Image 1 (cartoon, helix red, strand yellow):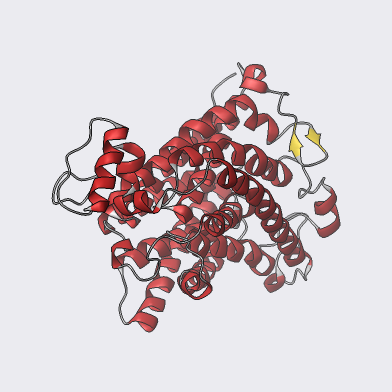
Image 2: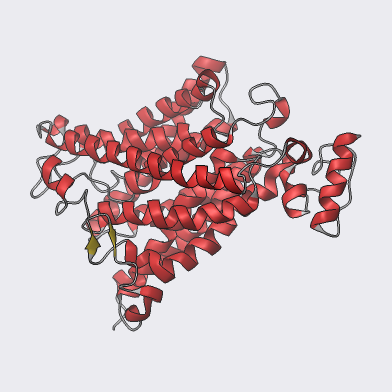
Length: 434
């Protein structure tokens, strides 16, 4: 195989997308309490380790190839990717792995600060196998929601260039379901200590996410013209979303915030993901503004509705993912074989296709995630004890603290790093009793 510019671009894009997960670790890590920062970051890092192995063994096979009931590919068709060695398909397989990794890692933000690390380590490979891989197959691999699938042929093919349904709606719904299963943090909505502990870390994470997103959206570009459109849209939509979020904060709360700026960028990136190759730059700006405003308003719903989505996975990823997916029914550009969205005279067909795909993704993910989450929660338990939560999951789950000064890691007087997990847990319990 001769290495072409296209191959190189996909490999570079894959590296950019893989960087997004450590970027997400920074983003989420800064949003938690100081004594939960390491645990939060570890939930992203363990997702890399587990999903990468699953993807090589059977995940890639399940996301493409010969389908089983139009739901997923044969997991043994390319088991271990043995048949891909010395083929250019291996490049695409690596690129696909990075999408699976970041999708699973996104879910963790909804259950931050109160989850057992071991339970999360079980959830990750099971969810990737039963939810992510089938959804990727159904949308991108020729399955149920594609033009060749039963639903796609009936409702029309939905546009999802880089993962509105597969990544963001999927992760947002899963986060909501797990948050409901595990329950609220102690002091939810009342304890000021649950506010983000490191805003600069959040902004560094958002910057890395934005940087990597150019590979996330642009890696599958088929032509230079398409790549250029994707690049501009991936710049414009999050910029507009940040402005929309900040204006919303200014009107609602009296001042714009750094956390709002970072969250607005991510909301815009989420919204443009399914639409990046199919809307104009003006459309991307409009989409970004709408996504920024609606996501900013949505993050406050958890306090009114009573669910504890710790780091706003639902408000940002589910809401902005739905906005980006449905917006294509209005602003999708006309293309060969496609009339475009309503604003281009395309009628209701594309909007209908987008709505059906979004609804199916919500229902499929909700049911499967509930089954997986409840099975774990009712057996080994998904949530740490109240004592462990008070002491901090960094210390009780990992025998570490993020900071070694001022007691930031333990929430009280300075506690030296314990020599073992058992000693750390004992020290944490003694501190709670004191």
